Amino acid sequence: MQDSSKQALLKHLSGRTFKTVLDAPSGGGWLPEALGPDVEVDGIDLYVDQASGYRNFWKQDLDEGLPKECGGYDLICCCEGLEHVGSPLLLLRHFHRSLKENGTLIITTPNVWYPQARLQYLLRGFFPSFPALVGKVEPGTHMHITPWSYPQLYVFTKLAGFCAPIIVPEPLQRIPRFHERLIGFPAKLHYRRKLRMANSKEEKYFWESAGSRESRCGSHLIVEATKII
Image 1 (tube, rainbow, N blue to C red):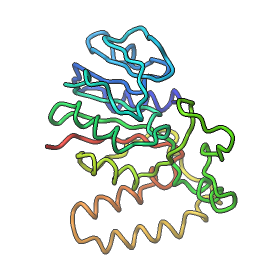
Image 2 (image 1 turned 90 degrees about the horizontal axis):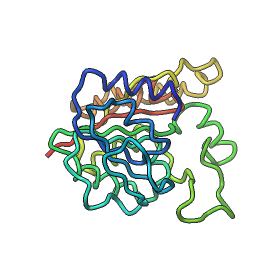
Image 3 (image 1 turned 90 degrees about the vertical axis):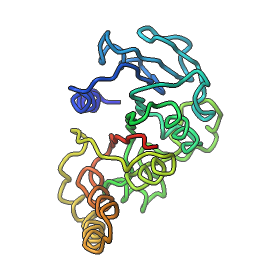
């Protein structure tokens, strides 16, 4: 996760109180220090045996969900993890189960909807950062296997019991270059048409979010979803 995305996330969370947090996967272990000493942070990662700064730490394959001990969190951060998971709905349901009522889920992931990614998929059949893995498929290795866009995140978080996710602005959601605008123009017109035809508030919100510059043009996504009962 790039430093600019970390700063955008911390800015988004600033001013809110989180007493207990789950960092899954924990990766480089940057979150406890960033949140400060007053926040109790638990961590999970498949590739790290132990990490400093965490109240509890588990070595766990997130394809199997969360440990039974996980629960009662105000905030769960899944930073650069969902694209590595082959069972994302199972994991998201475990996140939902482990959050308090009205708890917050943060997901960060590469976005495959931006124009250059669409063009590469058209020409090669593979998205950026999601190459062919022939000869490299081995359980427990660090592979990008599940590509994400805002519509996919919307469907999976809703299926797991969350409200519709909101997009958090960040520097990687830059203004597109001229050729990218040309590539993305037909899709932009399509989303605008869908927005005009929307018959409900939720449908309108979906097309506003899916058709936003952040969703269409950014190479990276940060979204927030709230647990609903």
